[in-house]
Image (cartoon, rainbow, N blue to C red):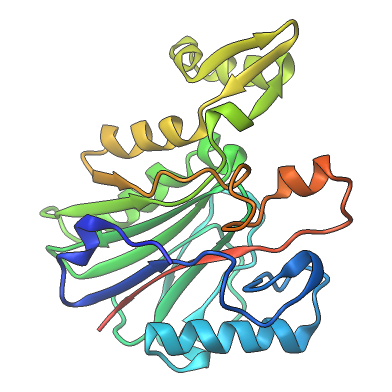
Length: 250
């Protein structure tokens, strides 16, 4: 389990970037796999999510997860949609005693807290969502609640630049958005680059005057701590687990 130093200072929120340890799944999913979209046994995922709820001190039906599709869709959770299926890649809420959760396996989990207006949020930021504006949309949705705000973000464990090899097509897609994106890439070898997703996401938040800190861990390299889509693909495994990151207001 990993925690933001900044978030730890706030007594009215709970948060955690959970590792893959401490759960009930086995095999590829050992052990704290929270991915409902995985092929893991339903009963194991259910046990794992109950464990997370207990750690976050909320009822199981108050741990809210998204059906994530690498979109830029942001949903506000309220009493009306609390128990409905949430199709989005970011959530915000003013509701107390619920935990918002984001699932990742190399993508960036971002936890958000507006200390001025008591709003929490979470973002699933893969390259697609980040490129299409998920971060700006989420922060603006919070800012639209009140012109005065004090927003913090913690960027969790994700794939590092050393592990994130991409092709020239990927590189050109980012440069087509703006030539300034060149700074997020390093030369690897002919027709290959290394992409700094963490820095890209960080800069999007900083541009929006959000105070940022990091849990600077590499999900690809740290096999014992994290699930990794890319690592599973390289090992030719037919599926992979997902880690969960959560935040709640007490």
